[in-house]
Length: 373
View (tube, rainbow, N blue to C red):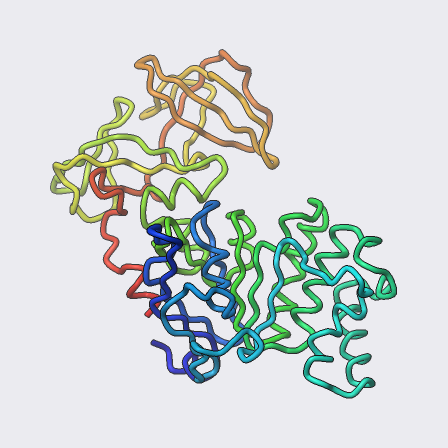
C-alpha cells in the first residue's frame, strides 16, 4: 500500500456489512490519497452507499478497519473522523437558513464567529449560492439545495470527503456545469474524496481512479481511461458505454501471425496473446469501432439497418446481417434510412476478448483486491 495514503489519506480495509443473512459488502478495501477523487461506480443495490456509511462511521453493522491520516478511527463515531459528507437527498436542516446549514459544522467546532462568516461566504461564492444564503431549504431549488449541502461538506476543510451521488437530483444543465466545476473544487479542498455515482460519464469526468463495485465486490480499480478501454469483465463492460460494448461469441485459434477469430463470416487477426485459443470466448467491439460504408468494400459485411437511434450527437445503428447476426455501430453525421443496406467492418485495434466461462478479460492478471491493498 502507498505509504503517503496511509499517513495522509483514507484507507478502508476488509469492510464487511451484512443485514441478517445477506452480506452486502464482502471484505472491500480501498485507499485514497489527499487531493485524489476516487469514484465508486456501480449499479443500484451494489453496496455503494453502504460502503460510504461504513467509512463515515454511520453503520454499526460494519466490520473491518478505517484509517484516516494514519489514525485508526474504526471505533470512532462520525464526529471523530474529520469527514465531510454530502448525500443525494440533501439532508439539510429545514429550520435553518442556507447560511446556518453551511455554518453548522464550524459551529460544532466552536470557531470564532468572524471566521465562520468568512468561510461560509467564501465557499458560497465559489459555489454560486451566495445570493440565497438567507433563505431556508424549502425556498431553494434542487440545484441550490445540492450546492448548499456540498458547501456544508466542504466548508470545514475535512480530510475525507464522501459524496453520495450528489448531482443525481439536479437538472441536466447544472449537472453538466458541476461536472466541470467539481474537479477544481475537490483539488482545492485537498481532501481524499470518494464520489458515488451510477453514471459512467460522471465517473469518467470526475474520477482520478474508478472503483467498480458489483454485488458487494470491487471488481476493477483503475484510472478512467483503462476502465473504459479494457473493462476487466463482461459485467463491467456492460456498464461502461452508451451504446454498450458488442459481445460476439467466438472460438479463437492461434496461428503463426497471431490470434484469429471468425465472426460475421470474417477472419479477424487480434493483436493479443493466445490465452483463450480453442476456448469459448466473446469478442468485445465498441460500436464506434465498427466502420460503416455505403458501398461494398474489401473485408466488409453487408447488413440491413434494422433501427436508427440519435444519441449524444451521434446516431446508433442496429445492423442485421443476412445470417441474422446483430451488431451496434455508431457514427457522426446523417443516419442512413432504416431498411437500407450498408457494409460494415470491425476494427480490431481496440477489440477485447473475454472468457465465456469466467466472464473475465483475457490476460487480466491483477485483481481489484490486489490493486486496492
